[in-house]
Length: 85
Image 1 (cartoon, rainbow, N blue to C red):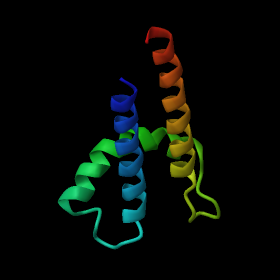
Image 2 (cartoon, rainbow, N blue to C red):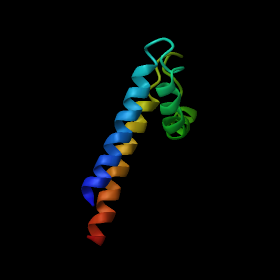
Image 3 (tube, helix red, strand yellow):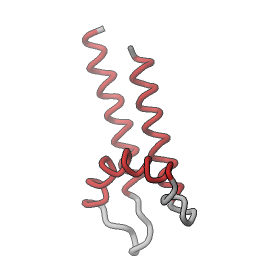
Image 4 (tube, helix red, strand yellow):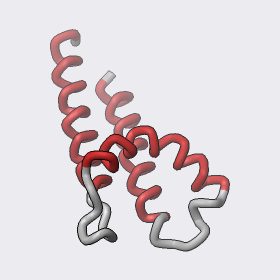
């Protein structure tokens, strides 16, 4: 059970990471994969972007915080699973 949960969290972690790195390349987010990742990742990132403003108007640190919170959620899910398994 842990391996399935770990795999899902890892996949989502890397999806967010790839989506953030895609912002450095022009026109990549408009591709099919960029739009697909946007539909899957933006609902998770948007609350963080709403509360964490960009530094100096350019540097967006909200994905870093979002990835950190995702790791905390992963540890919480492991703790919950530990009670049931």
